[in-house]
Image (cartoon, rainbow, N blue to C red; front, top):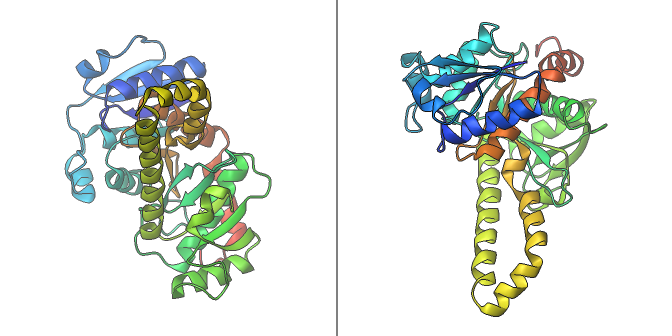
Length: 333
């Protein structure tokens, strides 16, 4: 498999990006990496040249850039060229930790969307207390969604959980302010009816407070609500770890207790750490494109690569296309 990597995207590029790629090269013998970015900067962090090539460019899309304008004007940016490798058939998938909006725009304009998908979704795996995790669609790709969009998200999420996470019958939940069928906005009420009529394993409305308890394997919502949930979970986890660290180092007695409990705390952190769950897949595009977390370290980027490889090997895009025909009407397609 050939993977195109935006080596200049993200807070820790290119160092953590290259280190994450080298971890992946050791783990997957058939993996070939195409770094896209400043060759001189990339080589500073490289320790291996086997199964690696570099496409040099000095143009980069920054986090402050307007997504559509940046993609159209910076055609030689590392992110755009990485996605272009997939479009041209040179690479099988692409990964970037750069500007989220720009990556979505590049995916749409360059790779294109699957027939039957009106709006692709940005879809991360998030942790649950039992360690299984759940898939949340959408977390910011589309702020204003239609009922048909959320039905499509559910179909794509069902495919991903079955093919990649190996969940036999994924439970689909609809994010809402209450579990009762009549609760919510006009959007959620319409989506509820659509999901009830589908062949999916729909478990009804789910509340945000129950998500980490594993109430559903796939949770669908509009991008505005999903982004609020994502940032709330990330912020709460970071704050909790910060509070624990402060309290456990506040006295000699606490430090002794912390030393004894260190393995347990490490296990908890690993269970709730976003980096262990890979990146956010841009579901609905014609090829696997993964958005790694902007602050990814080498481990987080490695897991994003692992997600891209699995999506490619499990033919997730092809399966989504097939499932859409079975779950959506000809008019919707």
